Image (cartoon, rainbow, N blue to C red; front, side, top):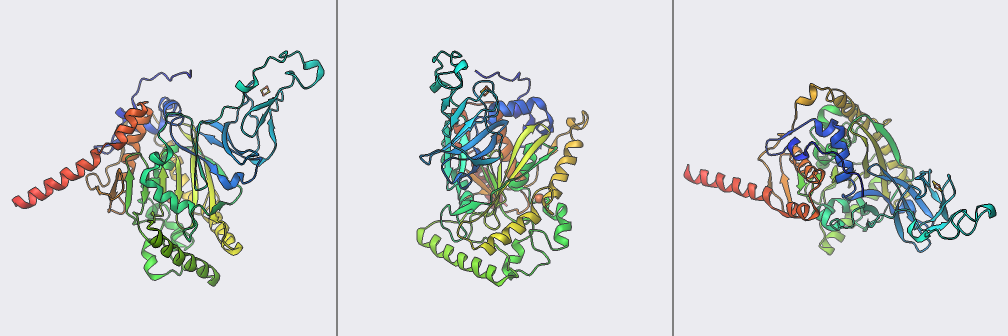
Length: 480
Ligand code: FES
Ligand code: FE
């Protein structure tokens, strides 16, 4: 049994989504952070890594699920596992490397050894090992019961590996719901080949002095910040929007740091920019071979999707509840906000490319990603500066008495064609998405049962509110 946090607060009391008001304690309080670590992260589906990072038997990749270190591994049979990276003897981190290939993990402390599926295979002083140690366990250690803790639920969605510690959790495909259209745009190759993407090895990692939810929220719908925060990189023509660069005419308006895009918000807390559409704008490149590659891939994709009756999700930015954010379409990368404390987060960014893309395309993308992302990236450093200063200015005793405003687009939601989703055509009103995120967040953090959680996710209260509003407007118009 795990120790339960001493609860004096209810998350739902801090989140008033109907009026668009959210307490700063949600982002600053240690008590809330403890509740998140107990009630949300061990029950939510978390992104662990990409299957191409563990392409061969014996490959491993070190990751985190909340505050727990995990290993994504592939065993000799090609199976993928997610293991708690903590020795069952005294808890030593059995693997301290970021990634690699091995036949087994031997703990550096007393040398218990585990295979790639986590089984405890050798213990000095059990039966084998140094002769004078043989008496340590008298051959009585119950090795099958002392393997590395294996995550019970792992789901490989087109190469994206997700895991959940809770055996009773909703299945991944139900959890994602129609948000999978955005995951498809992330995981499928540009020409529509399912899952035909790979990550560039090496994950960009950095720490920020702010809460993990600042990051999730920024990606799930905050396109509002682009015009101010990223004005300088756009002004000099090196931002992702490509302003000041040569672009296809009809794509020009859709560029920018994802400014001016519609929003879709899911009852399970996921949120994204762009509705279902055929359009994934990509720039007109200076390099003719780049245009040739993308134009060709684009034509193939359109034909393939038409033929297969598939739709195309938006390109985002988007966040899969709670902490996996990404940009899909072009270019595409994944960003996970690993919680460290209430006011510290370790951000990881993975970069993707079509597996079959020629080297010049991968090289172009590599340079783009370096220019854009991380503390050295021209765009992303703007964001982290905001989050750090917002935290400094919000964690004071007096500051915490005053809530944040989430009233953008209140009451303007529209029915979405997607399941358990609402849509906002107000291109900037991403707080529609944030409100759904925090409502779901409070339901998890207050430790509602899976039965309650799934009932609430399936309830149509937002959709009913939209219908009531539309009916009332129609009645008022008829009366006038
Ligand atoms: Fe790992 Fe003792 S802590 S073998
Ligand atoms: Fe930004």
